[in-house]
Length: 254
Image 1 (cartoon, rainbow, N blue to C red):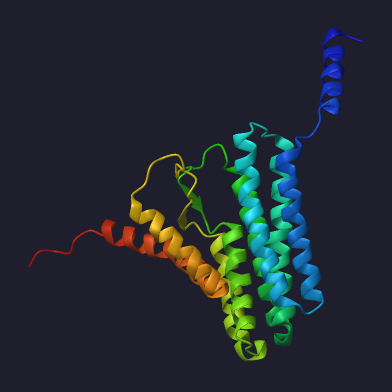
Image 2 (image 1 turned 120 degrees about the vertical axis):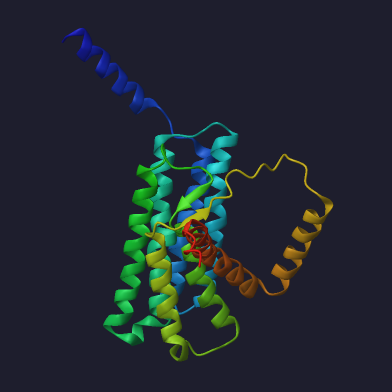
C-alpha cells in the first residue's frame, strides 16, 4: 500500500469515527417528527392538528440552523439532514394534508395540484442547496418552502377554525396550492430575515408592536398567521412590480 493510500484509509477511518452533533440534529429530528405527525393526523381526518404540526415544524426548522451557528456545530451531515427533513415537513406533508382535506374530491385536478406543490418544494430545496455559496444572504430566490407550507397549512387551519365545509372552497384550496408550488420555483426575490441583528438596540415602539403581535396571535392564531404569510407571499411580487416600474424607461416627451 502506498503512502497516499494509507493516508486516504486513515482519513476514511477518522470520518467513520467522527460523531454527529446532537443538539442541532435534535431540533431537525423534532421538525421531521412534526411533519410526519401532520401526515398521520391528516390520514385520521384531524386537519386542524395536522396544520398546527406543520407550523410547529416551521418553528423547529428555524431553530436548528441558528442553534448550530451559535454552538458552532454546523456540519455537512446536518445540512443534508435538514434538507431531507424540510422535504417531508414542507413538501410532502402540506400537499398530503390539503389533498386529503379538500383536493381529493376534484379528481385528477386535485392530485395534480398536490404534485405541483411537491415538485416545487423539491426543486426549491435542490436549488437552494446548490446556491448556498453564491446566493445573496439578504434574499431568497423563490418563496421559501416553510413559508409555502405555512400558506397551505394556514388556509386549512383557518377554514377548519371557522367550521366551513372544505368542499365549498375547493377551488380556493386548489389556487393556494398551485400559487405556493409555482412561487417556490419562481425567480421572485423574498427578504430572508437572516441579516436581522437581535443584539442591536431597537426603538421602544418596536417592542410594543411585538407585544401587540403576540396578543393578536393568542386571540386569533389561525387568522394572524395566515394573513402574515399571505402578506409575505405577495411581498415578492409587489417588490418585483415596483422594481419593474422603476426600471421602465420614461415615455417620449411631447
